[in-house]
Image: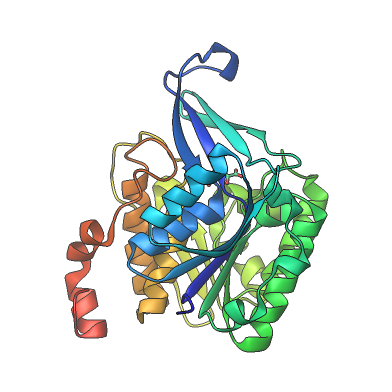
Length: 319
Ligand code: KDG
């Protein structure tokens, strides 16, 4: 059966420093998983939808660990290519105060070899949503071409495009990133930037002004993730602020990806953009209460009971 939601990008192994400090001061790491689109796929799957992933990984132990993870999470991997002698990318997270910083070892990774030839047309055409990110575009020019090709296939077949710009100046030069990302926003239906990324893209500080600029590029909705201030939802029909949840922050890694996955999953479930964003907002809040990008992403059973009224009214059931 074709998945309803398909994501495309690079998965990574995550080494998360146990103690705070710079990377060179850190001697112990917890092993986890990351990669924004893989995190997205896991969140959407935990939210109860059928999800598939398109990627390349090395035929190394880390690649095998990712395959095992996706299998446990119920993600369809028939379009994940295991590359002979390829390497799976890794990254380290270190934390000083509230600031976390990523150090990557991913150049030349199997995923950076993604190309147009790896894009399965029917798989995307038969899905309801294609999710891609700025990181999927930043890792190499062939991967960037692959993302644009996948978007073209989606647009031709009526598959909704969800896009998280995830701006990573460490991966590409900011002017090129800005040009590619702004063009991709024009082609997308749902745009899901963090405030930090939106500032880098537009040079603006005001969420409303940022929403105006991004919405004018043509997407159906912009969901601006404001971290501790919640979410600003902007579309032609509506503009509203979704309040944050007060939680004890342990690690913000992956919260934006969890938001994206829960948002798309609930939109596919049949909820409105606003209701999907409200649910995603809670999933993201729960994700920051634990360490690592993947482990703390909540399951549907942890989230759904808080929204039983919305689910009952909109869908006639609470699942
Ligand atoms: O959003 C969290 C991701 O940034 C993290 O998992 C690593 O995908 C990642 C990246 O390339 O920065």
